[in-house]
Amino acid sequence: MSSQILVVDSDPEYARYLASFLESSGYEIAVCSSADRALDLLEATGFDIMVAEQDLEIEGRSLLSRAADLRTDLAIILTTGFGTIETAVSAMRQGAFDYLSKPIVPEELRLSVQRSLEQRALVAENSKLKAQLTRHRQLDGILGSSAKMTAIFEVVESVAPTRATVLITGASGTGKSVMARVIHNRSSCKDGPFLEVNCGALPDTLLESELFGHARGSFTGAIRDTAGKFEQADGGTLFLDEIATASPALQVKLLRVIQSRKFERVGETKTRRVDVRLILATNQNLLEMVSDGEFREDLYYRINVVNIEIPELKERVEDIPFLLDHFLRHFADYHSKPVTGFGPEALDHLLSYPWPGNIRELENTVERAVVLSRSPTIELRDLPPGIAQQDRPVVQLRTEILPLKKALEEPEKLIIRQALELNHWNRQKTADMLEVNRTTLFHKMKKYGLLPPKGPDSPQ
Image (tube, rainbow, N blue to C red; front, side):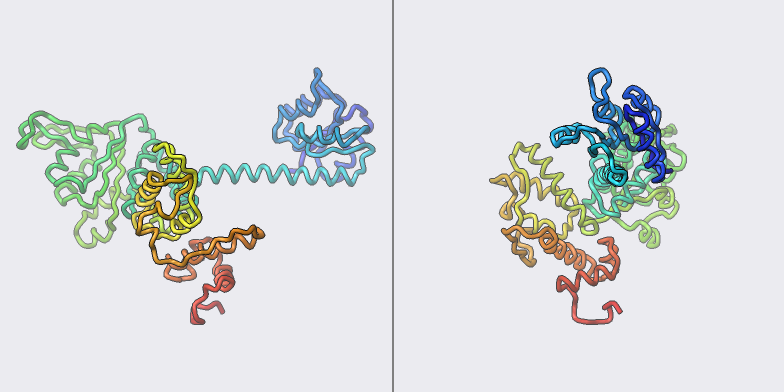
């Protein structure tokens, strides 16, 4: 569909003259000669541009200001027979895109319309990208702009409103419990309780009682009837962490309650029924445990309806700067410390550290640094010895101002080197991580002196 333009001029013949030229350029044109009619048309039709005489007013206000209030996305080109620099500047400040003096040269009008459409498209695209960036970098408190986290956010947005059982996998410290709560908060049972049980923190006998409850006198110390977590979570979500540690006997009972939502308390014969959404998590490979006979196959397929695998921090290095900034602001506010950023050397070490403890380690590191910091910026002395003293090349920071392209080369080289090291210098995996093609990666490695001695992996 071609762009729509509204031409407004108190001289109807002049308005038709402008309109005929714009129509010959392929635009859809509407013409009017009064400000009141112009506003009516703007309300009724989604015009992209308004070409209007400057002096038109409605109830003491210019058409420009009224139109700008009505349609913030409208590009406005003003025309006048008495143009000065002062009036042009004033018009631009009020929101006009361009200002043309009469008699209007058709080619100037064509170029102005073309530029305004390009600017309008750019603003719309930037707004779209900004919205995508905000969604991809944060999902209810979970930060991540990497391809892997973006894909996870899309899965969460799809599965959360359903009642499907979710299995969250990933190494310790990657944020599985946080992800479980995000799913609950976006679900239809978000107004119900959210309860969490760490299956690896309790002996098997106590874990069964914790989950299903017990009757008075069913074991030593059972002085009263007690509801378990399944009953307490009725109408909400029950999150079972470290599910791989459940014993074979407990796995049988879990399978039954998942299938039928029925169970009995320990020491009781009465069958109870609950309506609970289950989310489970593990840092173990359950499929390997099934193959080794350590985990029931039927239970595995019951809980693995939707699997969300959270990557380790070293697999999403592009998210680290956002996480550092997020935790810095959080802990600076929490501890009432006037810390506003990271010193260059400290930031360099934080970005190159492999983070074996994942987000949990990064969070604790930033809190420690904020607490110990004696200046507005976190310095190398504020970091734990294992990070501050890591064996790594030191990047000499420049104090002079360089052209932007040149200044960006050192951080780009550092990021490429980090990605290569994380992937054991496998170029295809590195290119996939950095979301570039292999040839581009090769040329950048060559540019920055990162190529190993010539070998079979060199591009042909």
